Image 1 (cartoon, rainbow, N blue to C red):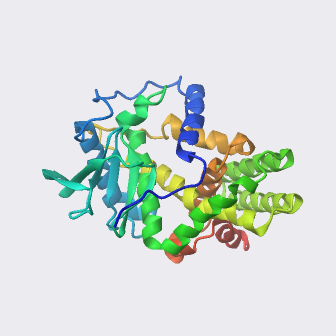
Image 2 (spheres, rainbow, N blue to C red):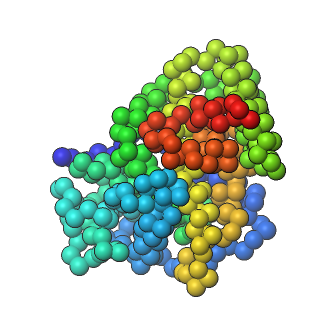
Image 3 (cartoon, helix red, strand yellow):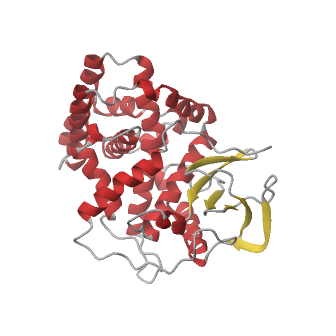
Length: 349
């Protein structure tokens, strides 16, 4: 079977998100010294660099050691990884990949084989390889070659885990995954430019941010109810169709949960940090992830395309961690509708 990258609609969400995050980085970066970064080769080499191998090993370690705290079953899920540079894709974790993948002899990362092929339109997302899904991400050197501000390996590692979580979503419930992808076809009909809609989204984001910051569970529940009320009123005032309401909900499942996983992996890595490790995870989140919470609180109505759903979905999942701590063990991943679970969590509070 010829494997094809999964399409995500007309917008290249990851690149837009990167640009927005870079603006946030410029605003936040001054207070702390940047993490030292290793020398890296040009972004078109026919072999994985030493930095690539170190990062992949850390991705595999974090997934195995903390994955079940991000989502039950994630740690043991057999999910290959694709890391790509400007000319090549490298597939880690599949012993007999379909052509044109070529298994590289005597190269293993944590016991997992590595294969290579010339780059075939790789994307930062989930990619079908044979009958399996792989988490696919650009190598650090490629990302940094295209960015005016440089990412550290700590942040890059959780970006790779974000894409692995997409592969996990597809692996757990392919029907729901395809349904979520399909909503991009109606994105052109979504009223992003409507001023009242944008203002209501700002209020939704502020309510979610306030609930996340609330000092007590009761106040967090109050903030969650406020968010849900604003959302219901916004959809009613805009006469939002059921199709466009599903667009919101499905992208909160698809991208919001992956953003949630990205941040949780960073927090868990920081809590287990080894001072002697070559890759350090800072307590309190790095600048790029801190900026996500600033955008949530102050700028939701200004987020283009699907970016607001990364943030609103992530925030709802974090609220559920607080208000209904066992929500992930009670609900299969493919059956999760975040706003419905949140509504149920606060109905008796």
